[in-house]
Image 1 (cartoon, one colour):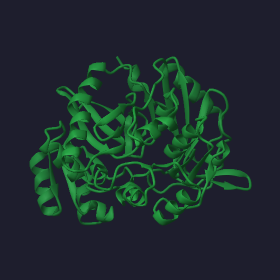
Image 2: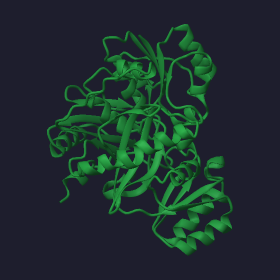
Image 3: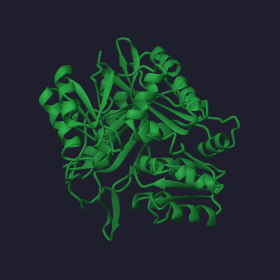
Image 4: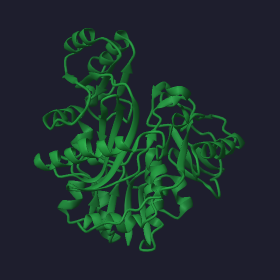
Length: 419
């Protein structure tokens, strides 16, 4: 098989590398990819993720067996519809099904209609109405841009003033453009967050091990929200019953709901959940793999990834088997200043060898080697018998790397160690 992966980040590096591991796969194209991926024998093609015509032509010319879509914006813009209209196999939800991610208001309305547990909410396009609601509800409260905002369109406001400022940023100051022209304001939920992913075709799905992302920039969940600073899986400190309940009350109902709404779901479903005192509730749905969760989940897959996805696309029984022992943990190294204005051009350390994998994201090739040209630059991932051993291995490696111009969190996975 020849396969095509669309995207350029660490998530796509992990997807493409795992696909290439299959004995059934001869070549994996990544469009546009990043320079670090070439070190793994992946074939980079300089076609942007929004150049649907160019991507389709590549798939046709190279006789690609199927395409795997990484980023949310390509799905929101309808790349799956575009490929399928031309008879090309592609793994991802249609534009209509992907609205679960690209409109938070749509996702909330579906959950309300089908009684899927989530925070109470209201949607606003008018600042004065939003401000009145915020003052009435009080803080803490959550303000979300309705559309896609690179993982940064959510503000967990600790005070009413902070909430009003966030609403003003979105509705009056146009901080997120059209994505913030409508905002969802919802109650703040207390509990521990976790992620559940599933490979889906209609109402058939294959669950992945639970994972936990770390969204805040700094240790102790301080600082601004980012695209994710690290993750680990599985989650030994959370009860198995919570995951079972989430499948029954959230995963199965949302897939049935999408079918009933005439938007059958195919692709990766990402449920961002929180375990509250009354059980798991939905924070958000994403219509694709998470970054950085992909980089710690796919190394745990023991079966053939490429053949599993092919079976799903053919609507045949698929084989997805996961490593049960140990913990896989990953730490993101980011450019100083991220998620705001950040430095570029810092030298990136050589890829790790042995028990630690390196997944690249915001890098470019210079004569001297790889240098940083993005916010999240690379991620180190390892699997060890325990969270502590995985942390020790990664943080010892990071301490030995020259990381001028970079920063990383030093507490990834530590929630699993608390009493």
